[in-house]
Image (cartoon, rainbow, N blue to C red):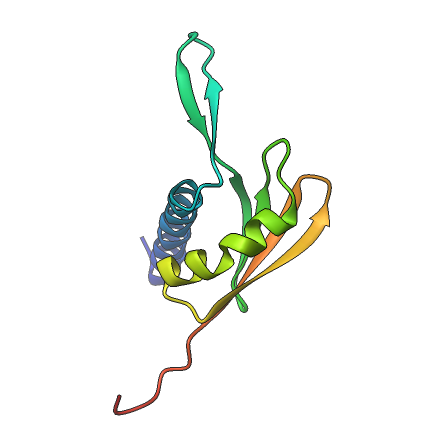
Length: 111
């Protein structure tokens, strides 16, 4: 595997880890709902990360029925803390779609 393909593969793996982490955080901050599985058991349904764009880091989220952007705005400080970023901005993209924009912390040299 050449170096360029290896870097791309590593970037894809890092993005996938971020997606799974964000989906877990959304569950942890109370944005998941109880639901039923096809097999008839109970399950947890969480908002789904549908795309990730870098620079600045933005994640498109498909919300669950009954959720509104304000639900995510209220949880934004907790999401930011869990992702170790300064802030999370929430933008409505359309019905059932929002975007989370991650604002990185400013790292001071020598601190």
